[in-house]
Every structure is written in C-alpha cells, then in structure tokens.
Image (cartoon, rainbow, N blue to C red):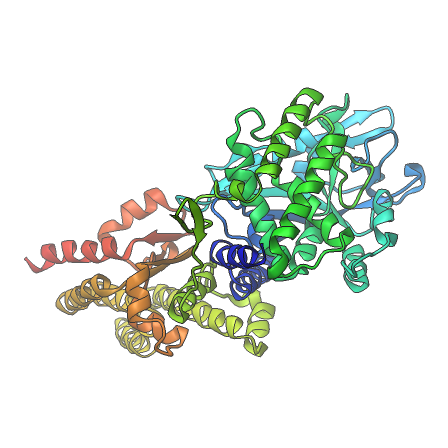
Length: 586
C-alpha cells in the first residue's frame, strides 16, 4: 500500500500540480487581487477578490474561476437590536436557519440604484431582497459584459472559448458572526488551523452573498453568510499531501461518484472540501505521501458516516446541516449503498479516473508503472503555470502594485513585472502616437514620429517575437513607408511560423514536445524565452489612438467602443497590412 500511495501521490503531482506549481498559481491570484483592487477602486466603490478552486491553487478541467465584487462603501453590521443600531445594512438572524440572515436598511442610508431597486417594505422595516438584488446585479454586469448570463446567484461571462468566470456581487461584514463563534474556541487537535490563522480569519470577518435558503417561506428575503475568503486561506495553509487529497476527492467525485446516474450531482465539491477540513483538524493521521491512500480513505469514511447520519455540518457553523433539503432519505439510501460499494472496491475504484494510474497486466496481475517528469518537462509545466495570468498594461492608477513588484525579491513577481512592463510600453507607444497626430505642425509631427520609431526599435523588440515588430510595421504603414512595413510583416510571418508556443490572455499554449526540446533545460530566463520563441496571441489596438490602418477604421468602430482595446490575432493583422499594401503600391 505504501508504494502505491507514493505512486498515486506522484501521479497527482502531474494531475493537480507540484508544490511549486501550486505556489505559482496562488501567487498569480494574489497579484490578480492586487491589480483588481488598484484598478477597480479608482473607478467604482468596490473591490474584487478571486475565489473558487482555481484561486485555491487547483487547475483541473472544470475548476471554477470566481470573482467576488464587494462593496467598499456599503458593509453589513451585526446587531441584536436593530432599533438602536446606527445607519446602514443590519444583519438579523431572528428565527432563521443558521448560516442565513436578513438585511435591513436602517436609518438615513445613502443607497445606489442596485440596492434601491431591491428594497422591500415589511412590518419590521426595509428589507433588502436577495432575489431582486441578484437581478439588478446581472443587469449591471451586462452593461460591461453584454453576453453575461444569470447562473444561480452569479453572472457568468465567457473569459475564453474554454473558460467561464462567475462574478458575484456581495457585501462584507467586518465582524465575525455570532453563529460561528464556536469555531473560534473549538479545540484544535492537530494544531490546524493555527491560532494565528484563526485570529487572521476572524479579523477579516465574512461575506454576505445573495443566496437564500430555498426551503424557507421568506427565501427571497434571506442572504447567506459566506466564508469564502477564510476557506481560501485554510486551503493555502494545507501541506502538499493534504492539497493533493483535495484534488483527488474532486477527481473521484467527477469520474467515479457522478458516473452513477442515480446519485449524480447529489454531492457537490463543497461537501468534499468541508470533509477534508474536518479530517485535517480532527483525525490522528500522518499527512505524507507514504500514507496518502490512508488519508484519502479516512476522508471517504467520514463522507459515508455523514450520509448515513443524514448530516453534513458546515465547517464554521456546525449546526448548519448542508444536506438538509438537498439529499432526501430515499436518495440518501441509494447514495449510501453506492459509497459503501466503492469503499469495498477500494483501490480498483481509483482506476476509473482517466489517466490517473498507468498500469499493465502481467500474469493476471496489475503492475503499476510510476512516471517521473524530467527536469525539462517540469520547466515546461512551470512556464505554463507562471504565464497563465490575465496581465494587462500597468497605468498610473496601480502605483502600489508597481512598487510591490519592483521591491519584491520573488522570481515570479520579477517575471510578472517584466511582462506587465512590456505591455505597458506597447500601450504607451499607441497613446503617444494618438497625441502626436493631433499636433498642427507637420514639421513637429515628422520629428516626433521619427523619435517614436526609434523608441520602438530600442524598447519594444524584446517582449516577444512579434508584438514590437507589429508596432513598427503599423507605424511604417501610417507613415506611408509601405515597403518597409511589408518587409517587417514578412519577417513577422516567418517568425510566427517558427514559434512553438504563444502566450494568450489566459495561459501559455505550447507545442509541448517542441518547446521542451528547443527551449527548456538550456538555462534561459523567461525574458529570453519570450524573445526567442513566444509570441503574443492577440495584438492590442487602442481604439481611441487610431494606431491601425485607416482602411479598417469602420470595422473597428462597429465592433469596439471608443475607450476599449481591439484584440486582433497577429496572423490576421499581418495579412491585413499586406492586403492594403497592394492598393497604394499598385
């Protein structure tokens, strides 16, 4: 069992990620939160934090990517006596299921359109309706993302062709709710979570999200207490074996438990995470790779017990039974029987997870083969994880973010600063061009365009294989230097053909083996890899600066708002310039 435990532990490093990869993912989302805090706070009275399993460090197919949009100027206060409380949103838990609250709007309280539209008059005062608030939040989201659709309490938007993101508007409560007070003083059996982490989590408070208890008669008036930020910190505090167990539980749910149509979707991954929290806190087991399978089956036995007892306690609020209203007695009996069957099947049930274990059959025996990644393969994986970040250009609104990266000694931060710097330079060039062409003196315009061309040649050619050259080709075309523009474009097309990977808004797309053979294991820095073998998936045109051929101005105006950025595939953009070259040059 010990050897198989180590083998599965190693395989999950390939599936879920090594400790270094997981650390990189978490670091990415920490920086995303920092960027979003800086950007959004300058425009709207909200701040954004990442949530979901991706922010926790998982990157499995189907892992969710959530963003919590939290009001900065509207927070929720706890009060046992609403009538004497100060103005604002007041939490009320009278005669309500643990984990849910009502929100009263108390006193002279300035409200925005979303809140105003969701207020409902009751005999106890103005109550904020979770249902009406959600509807208004989706409408607000569609103003920025027209394709956004309502998905439960969230607004779902398409981030890429294969990745959706959920956006949830909610409120913060800086006070730890009394209904969860037991968690603070709970006996800590295994020094997890640490007392310092508990203090940090309690000081952060909780979130109040527009999700109601569907089995309450006043469900549209109820909101749920969310411990999303606390859960993310708890997951981040796990050791790597505990985190891999989390990944295996999610894989097992998807490929094994949910493969039975009779019990499909009765369990959700949140139940599994809750189970893992309790096991780490209470079970006297050793969480290391030699004991990995015992750790997994310990969690599984607790799940079976919960189903048998028809009680799944919320980790922070023990008297909140999360099975209530979700798993009926009849369905529960079917689920219990199936889970027991899987438990007795043991190791063989893990073979249902596609690709998890590699084995061959010799003399009617299963012989497992362990796969160890080479140094170059690990480097390829790390590069993919590091660059899987929707980085944007840095502007003057993000000074704290810039200073954080500049002063950081972390290699990941340094690489991200480099990428962000080059994107900033590319946007600066286009913005500068927009200012140049508004000058009334032709002599000054000519001089400044010449200086801009020199600037591009000296500062924009090192970020990746084509973006700087596309800037140069565009400037030459706009300066009527058509032949030079075409020469640059022809070089771009040759370059694109030779590249084995490209960096998109949400990751590094790699021709894996070619990248491993040609780039990895050679001691190259990330900058050198970008300069010699990586191109950017989209060429970004600032619409307001008109830094693109005038022949496509009508198309750009039809598809993009004046203050937006047009994203164009570099192959397509290169051929656009070639096509229009034919016309002026005959």
